[in-house]
Length: 252
Image (tube, rainbow, N blue to C red; front, side):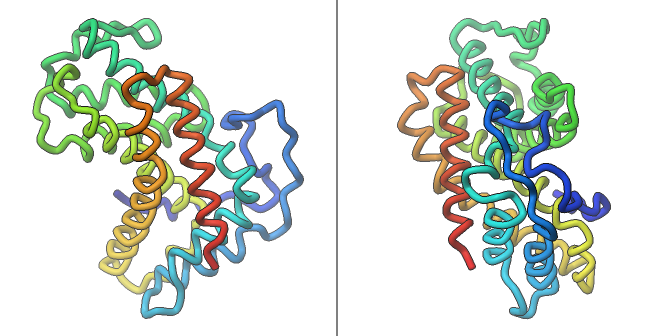
């Protein structure tokens, strides 16, 4: 886990949703509002500084409501993530049931029985799209596999329980949102007065994001995991992020 402060964040005049990442490209986007990141970055900086001057909950409210255009727009930005999550679910199911699966022409049956960290590297790279979200998806997927399966030494998809798959997908979206949000915060990270406070702030924010993802995604997965198809899984992830944005948009 680490901040993306060096990115500086996008400028307010950029489209609300990057064209390559739009889950609903057929739907027009409203024009971005000027200084749409200002309130989010200000509150984020206060939360990073600590001392009760601001809160990450309030920052997330401004992020969802203002910076990303609200609940009807913000979740559209994660189209490649829904695809990657759906593909991960599909390939785990195929490997568990049939002992084989193919992604982009690569036979993944050779991964069975291999060390988990090596498998995580391979899967993350294969599922990362060939567009500007490559590093975002790859890093979130890699971190999720390692973090969600701490007791798994060797990759045995048939041995993965439904609960482990739920934790894996929850962690994927938690890491994804953490990286995206911290990147958009940009220079607001400079409000931290020490490396220790930065580490504490990162942990606080990730815990808050992970709790929201767990609250909204886990029940949907638990209800539909057994019979879900890949399109079903993509729709489940989108529904969860819609609900997260609705929750966050109400936080002042």
